[in-house]
Length: 190
Ligand code: ADP
Image (cartoon, rainbow, N blue to C red; front, side):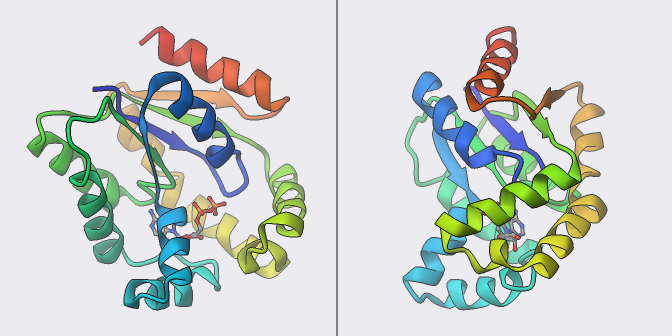
């Protein structure tokens, strides 16, 4: 299986690039942000809980997120692989992911980390707010908080994959096509 962690700060382009990757490699796309938003829309209990964190730019607690992700993974029968978008966001999530992929007889092939500097992220998120309707994109304070949480809790996950020799940094600045080609090149040379 080809299991990719597509990593990067809020606004790095994970969602956009995931679309390209699933098309080319026939992978199952699991975006924790999208799953939470679908639950919010469906007014589920999980949605109500997730919303209370997301609206403030905080992470949804690990226990909730890990259980949800696990239940999504096992829904798919003999997939070609997964692209994890927005997960793992903490070291505890990364450890849990290893454990349950291992139980399925597989593991993470690579982490592709999109690198984009902070000012560019802020510009992109405010621009996305105009079309996404996402409250967490429209509020500059919430954006600051998300970037802060990324730096504190999420960026350390890079070291987790670095230690397993699975970490690849990708320049996330350029046209969408240019960045897609950088990702394709790395994946094709695995
Ligand atoms: P972005 O990467 O642009 O911030 P996402 O859609 O990936 O957007 O995430 C939106 C919000 O959903 C996050 O700010 C967080 O509150 C919540 N979330 C998504 N994935 C996770 C996760 N793996 N762990 C905890 N919270 C998460």
